Image: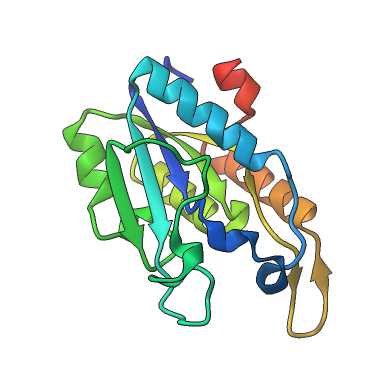
Amino acid sequence: MPDWKGSTALVVVDVQKGFDDSGYWGPRNNLECEDNVGRLIGAWRQQEWPIVYVRHASQDRTSPLSEGSPGYAFKDVVVGEPDLLVTKRVHSAFYGDVDLDAWLKEHEITGVAVCGIQTNMCCESTARMASDLGYELIFVLDATHTFDIVTPTHKVYRAREIARHTAVTLESDFGSIMRTVDLVG
């Protein structure tokens, strides 16, 4: 991997209060996610590297992430103003109200470090798209979390298994899987 410092934007995906609703989402993995996201934001801000905050605006009015609901707000760990704020209604941050790809290119950013919620949904979708568009990808696995999934046939997939699957898939074809400590100490 080439030197990523200064040319890599931290893309903080959907770290919103609505994901605290365990009655809606179910059990999660990685209770250290938010602390690690906070460490990444702090390190990026200290170095004056570019930060992008992404917010999901669910069109489902019953979702904890719908606009106008308390869960639409960012969690307290998402502090300060980002260099860019993207609001999206789909999985990938590249399909938001702002053209993330154009903004990254305009600012000569060649890589993205993706963190946030959910590992296998919006984070993975954003990561795959970033790689497909030619950006160097760092996926900060321990700064993401996801939830158990129960299929319509009642098969249960545990969040930790889902996160491992995402890591294997991304690392084999899309970019680097890293830990917070490896990036910022």
